[in-house]
Image (cartoon, rainbow, N blue to C red):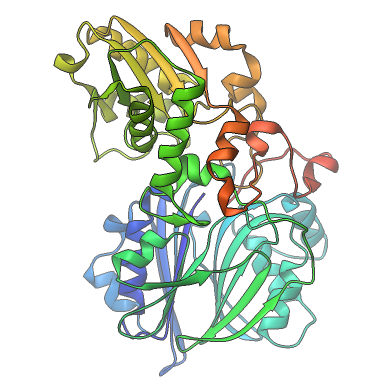
Amino acid sequence: MCGIVAVSGNPEAARLAYLGLYSLQHRGQEAAGIATFDRATGDSSRVREAGLVSDVFGEDKLDKLRGDLAVGHIRYSTAGGAGLKNAQPIREIYRSGHLALVHNGNLTNFHALRDRLLDEGAMFQSTIDSEIIVHLIARSREAGAEAQIIDALQQLEGAYCVLVSVDDALFAARDPFGYRPLVIGALPDGGLMVASETCALDIVKARYVRDVEPGEVIRIRGGEIEEVTRLPRFVDQPQPCIFELVYFARPDTHLWGYTVDRARRAFGRRLAQEQPAPGDIVISIPDSANSAAVGYAEASGIGFELGLIRNHYVGRTFITPTQAGRDFKVRLKFSPVREVLDGKRVVVVDDSLVRGTTSRALVQMLREAGASQVHLRLASPPVRWPCFYGIDMPTRNELIAAEKTIDEMREYLGVDSLGYLSAEGMIDCVRDHGETYCTACFTGDYKAPLVDAQEGFAMSSHC
């Protein structure tokens, strides 16, 4: 999923970008980077390293990042692979100036574009699709950075939020389907921040201004919006990713008309109506399922308890790139509260079930802690289809619901009962804002063309 941030028109741009990335750490934990441009000297700087934001940036690193324009990135690697070569921002000098680019999403015509560029003589330094965008900008025959960026974006298929700085100009763009969120905030001491989620604005006390709309390209200079244009491509109905509300976004983020916490509580209440369970207590798989579990408890009348304690010094297990790493982190991440669980019929609420391996280990942990029954309830529908728009679900054979029936999953997980929120119920919970959401991972209904699949390439995520 990655997280991106940019600051324009503030002399503390790098430090503000650092704070923004810190609040977006849940979107990626493998690498972090910031690039700046100093109008006074005409120089650009960059720091990018593997690790968490707090590990990468000390005072010595931030002191090197001078200027009132900064772009930053935290990496959640998928099939593009980990490693410093794939960390962002990408920084280059080309004919229109010093360029720095960060990208959140996944291009579904990555292979087609890359092969074309290789045939034309391009040389790549990484395996990520974000580098494709840099090549397209640099090779554009249009005059001026804005026209070159728009020309490049028109050639992309799939999901992208892109922040590009060219000298002192910042460009913010979102794909026409609007899969990933991107928001603009006004900083209290002057300037603008653009970020993946509103929680990045909150940490620096920026005032939310508006979303970058699907298909928009916005030019910002000196902390002021200079121009807003739209990509010529037209989409009847944007398709923001509902999995952002289900799992990825932070509960305090405002997303598409909702606080994420509000949406997840609604999912939990509807789940209790659709999938009641005979339980003595309701517990969550912390932290992403906390809100849904509270909603389930409210609607069911079963008391909510803290049955699992999360070690917050361990990152999110879903975005750990290998299965071995996920299994190890489960043991480090959760501890059962035996006094709460012992002898109880436990209703366990989780946000989703993807591979099933984490849930299976947790169920065993709950039984060892004395739970007499375990009833698993999922606050989203079965994930049966891969996501090609930025979430690490690249193949169907990794998805437990694509391979097994409900009874087979129940037996595999070792639970007494298993119930999912329906797709209709999920959409009803967030329908009043008028959005049409991307539910491809639940339904297989892909809106943005899967060009690489159509041309015989193995589809994968690269951001």
